[in-house]
Length: 417
Image (cartoon, rainbow, N blue to C red):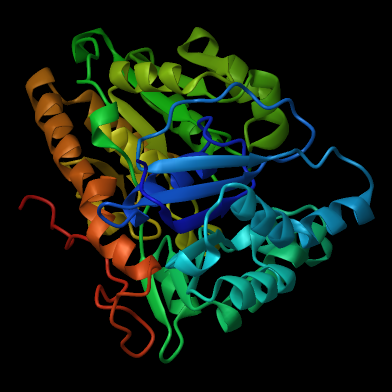
């Protein structure tokens, strides 16, 4: 007989099909499940996309997928969002789950609104935890502060900061923003299942340096700086570098990121665009790459978030070439798990690439081994005792944070330790 779910996780993603939000939900749900219990994920499928066939989930998780919204005008979409908690309660009744037996509910910030808090808090009578992954800046949007999405994001943040019983934050920057007296907060970076990743299998560095960027860059990741850093290398070194971009076509990259056609054309066949690919293909590219690259500007959005690309790359044994933002300095030491750049500029990238090109295979394999070792700090199993106690309200509250203190799981290491 299956255990009765004690924790409920809400979502409105294309779950569980591989994007960063779905991956966050999957691993957070696994770590939030108390021993001997199960967690129910209620996913309000977004848009009017056709839902895929069911996918096998870990045995401790159950999934209920609500019907798609079906598009419609602005008012209809608003009404659909406001009615979500009622549809969640109906799903619980239809699944035969007694609401009084639940010990915790976790809701992503994007779904947090007054109707959700009011209905679920009064009906379920258990702690409501909000999972906060980002804080957007006006500069990210064409219309700045007048962008409807930005306004909604800040409104949800305002409500969550005042109404949530508990807050999970993806970074210490966000944890500080949401900390309140007598309200527990916990920092949980992106999690991975290290068992999902095979051993790395790159070619010898003698044949050239293989770099990988996986994701959709937008304005947050400075791909133009990466390309310019490659172009500024001496010609003999430049020809040894190959960059693969998985997640965008060339047309998409030049439309939504800071890339321009001239820089792309200048690198020719050294630059490969794969477009949107499956998660299995991304993992295969990580196995074949020498470094994944992630260049972000300091401050703002980059400090508030935590790139999920980093733990995934470490788990695959692919060291990272990046500059420190957010809590990355806690996990990435220069020369151990990757190469840390002095800044996000093209000259900083060039210097990092020069150092990467100077490595021999033995040095790279040592760095790869350190990366996989460090990935254990992100494995959901390491977080399970803390997260499950936190979401179910069993963690001790101390002046705005729980017993884990909202602190990273590991202490930073200095280069060369």
